[in-house]
Length: 394
Image (cartoon, rainbow, N blue to C red):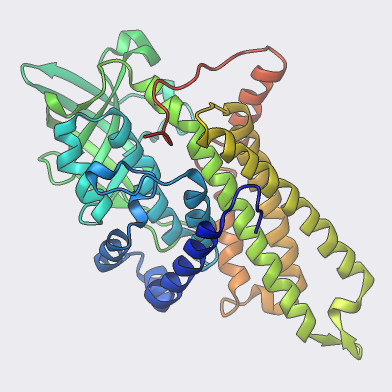
């Protein structure tokens, strides 16, 4: 445990969360991976334990804890070997619910945030579109104001929890002529007339439902607007730092899990009359990989510390996701190699992890987009403004 960031209380939380996952989640993972459907009961169990309210305000049922409880939550979810299950949980808690926490009116918080914290409702964030994944400003979905409603038309894709969610946090153009400055965000009930969704068939993250969602003249009450009209782009941007850090933390945690598994396997497997952890070529490969994982983990912790103290570390968070997901892919590839033919078998955890990890450099902003964002900051001296409200401050 890193005592710079983690206290005794953090350690106790980690142990209790590990036990919870082993008892309540792990026995069902293989079934959920096969069916692509996570049973509703587990959301309510997470809610009962307070896991969806770690950083949420107490008045809505949250615990208002510091950011390192969230880091522990993310890390341990990666160590039960289901990227899809982990994604369903953190996409609800940190993508959809963050917008509700920061931008929703008190009335909407009572209606959506309280039951989200308790696990009675599931949320999904809907930003990416079929014609523009990382290009948020190029969005085509529109919301036209008519009286006391908005008429929503368009489509979204690659939406985690998009099929089974109870509500959707949807970005749409309210003033298309203003481009990115004409975007707004709404809460849309999943069962509203004109909303339809189809499940996508993915390479990895098999347990989570990733949907393509269509909006056909959906009537959205005007009071379901989050924050101010035409401020949606800035709301999305202000939360990107957290989303990217989350994916960076996920990456270092799964890489660490893969390495630990490989090291344990190597201590038991024999070849040519000795344990394979005695071969210098393999020992040095492990040393290289462990060094890289340790470096990105420490960097991610320091970035989390800044975010938790109200800073806006957009450059560091972008670097976190870029480097952590790249290293995780390489480390999991290398760890699978240590298992030889067994690494390629579905009965061993590395095959699933290998597929799940590949989404890291794609989702939440591709590595190519992140490189350009970082280049703008370090070469062109572009500055991104601090968020309007701090996510991890009550």
